[in-house]
Image 1 (cartoon, rainbow, N blue to C red):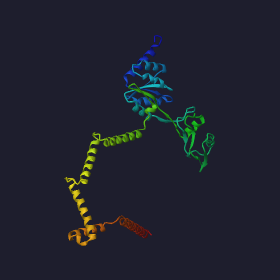
Image 2: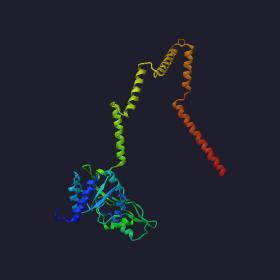
Image 3: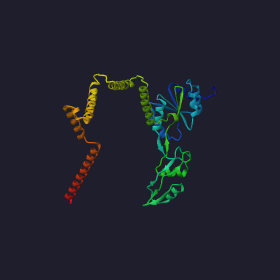
Image 4: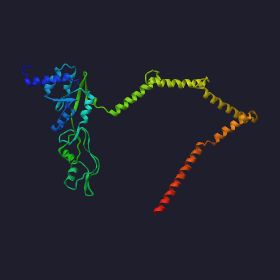
Length: 337
């Protein structure tokens, strides 16, 4: 580098120092960002990240001369107007902040549309005039309705990947449609010998949270079924074991403090069922006390409304409410003439 200008050496040295002193290094594209907006973005990142623009050759040399392994791979992502970003933030947080700082911008003639550009139907707010022909010329269905120019249906005026013409760009701006975004475009980021490209850094937070919650539930279910004890599965396993033990004790008729009342209730119910069958065959086979118990049980069962009876009662109550509402409405009508 003996023939390299001194300022270039200093520039490379500064870049190397920044690369080696920051855990995360990003390669960004600053194309089409107006100077005032770029200045605002620099100010918003102050204290969290540092943006350094330089010549591609100098950035490439600094990346390759750095002591960090694999950081030189960032040279492959020098697109448009490249700049290096240095930060302590992890790449995902940096990407989220940069994406959130982007602002809508008018379409530019000659630019390639990153998405379909759709002109929505509705009132344009324009009075009848030459603009009607201009809209129709570029393929936007429009007509005069109630003294205003209206677009009759949604129209995709530029498809993803197509170039935006001058006429289309001008009309979109007149319609207050700003399909472009202006902001720092993070192409890739380096951290711990790993390169994260923009497609990896793009995260759907809601979907990610849903996936984590689903995985957590599946892990708990697996640990319970596999009888793996941990801080979460242990209470559930103990509860499950207690339920199974109680069920086993009831079926085996083992007397414990937990089963006694349940077994007595079961025995009482079986006794009444047996007495009922016996009484049906021979009334003298059951004593007076049992007859009274059977009668009391039958009376309770009879007074308890069946599902059909409950349904009929609900319908009657509903009809009564409707009648009351009609009476009230008639009363109000009479009151106010």
